[in-house]
Structures are given as C-alpha cells and as structure tokens.
Image (cartoon, protein in one colour):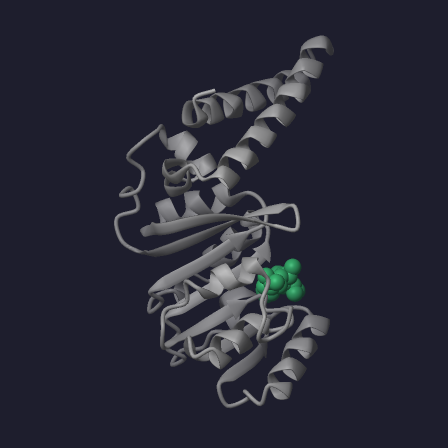
Length: 238
Ligand code: SAM
C-alpha cells in the first residue's frame, strides 16, 4: 500500500469522499488516504489528524514526500479537536479503529460536526456502537458496504444528516443495529459469510455454557449470545 495504491478497505472509504471535498481523516497514521484522495483528484484539501507521535511524524513526512503540504494540513491531537473554526470541513473519515472508539470521537467532537455533510466510518469491530450513535444524533445511513481483504471482513458506514430511521424499515431495530440495515437488505455473500461465522462461533459457546454451571456470568453470557443468534436468524432466515 502507498499513496497511489490503497488497500481495498481504504479504497472503498476513498470512494465515498465527495468530489471536491475538504475532509478530515482522523487517526490518519501514514496519511495515505488524504494523499491518495488529493493525488487522484477526489478531494481538494484535507486535514490528517493523529494523536500519537510516531504516526503523526509519519503522516508529516508522507505529505512532504508527496509535495502536498499546501493541500494537506497534518495536525496532532485527540479526535475532532484538530478541526478548527474556519476549516470548512465537509466530510470526515475515521477508519481502522474499533466502533466504540469511533463513536467516542464523534461524541466528544460533536461541536465540530455542524458544517460536516458526510461521515465515512470504517470500524474494525462493533459497528453497532456507531449505528446507535448515528440513530441518536440525527444522521441517516446512506450506504453500508462490507468487504473482505486478507481474510478479514470490514464494514464501511456512510452517513449524512437526515432522518435516521429511513433505512430501518425491514427487520427489528435490534437486528438492524447489529447487522446493519442496508447490509441486511443487500445480503451480499461476504455479509452472509460474516454472520454465519459469528453465528456458528456463538453456537459453540452456547453449547459449552449449557454444560457449564449456572453462575450469574454464565447465565448473562448465555442470554446475550442466544439473543444475538436470534437476530442473525431473523435476517438470514436460519
Ligand atoms: N486510518 C488508518 C487506516 O485505516 O489504515 C490508520 C488506522 S490505525 C490502526 C489507527 C490510528 O488512529 C493510529 O495511528 C492511532 O494513533 C490513531 N488514533 C487512535 N485514537 C485516536 C484519537 N482519539 N484521535 C486521533 N487519532 C487516534
């Protein structure tokens, strides 16, 4: 991977950055996504935000190497705190972190979202935390993608300001939040693979719990997993 050839995961994220946008890539690490998006003529400007020293320095040197210091501002800070008034950021990308951390970044930085028109979020796990946050904060999912790369499955969530309930028409709210309302409707082969694997994994644990003693923890885990299995059954008709 480099500034001209992204991983399939980041290329999918880049595909949702609106043409001509100024975007902030939070947790940019190597800054490949901002560099690629400018070099390919997708975005006209970007902020690469990083909290950690090493990745921040690596983003800085990558932007210098690509001679893009006039188009990409590399800033060190926590989450959306790197966005200043007057930056006119219209899109935010956050990729390669857990869903709970992405949700926290959005929650903590909610005052920076006023002018933002689109969020492109790629949680490695727990996309459910992000879907809940979007639902509670007036963002509508306009698309969801699920892809497989190097034996790992990734979800990409794209949201804009709008009626959050719009995509939540088929299935129960709980099933939609866990599996993704748009992904559940599309039911791509990768989606079916992910949830069949999860389902079988939970089934094995549930069988073990049935044989184990009835402690409080075991009972709670049993309830949690059997509930999630029912949600998967609802969508996959298992
Ligand atoms: N976005 C890149 C990608 O998808 O390939 C890099 C993902 S990397 C696994 C996560 C990066 O997010 C790390 O470089 C980490 O330092 C940064 N990070 C974690 N928490 C952050 C926060 N609160 N604010 C900004 N950056 C953060």
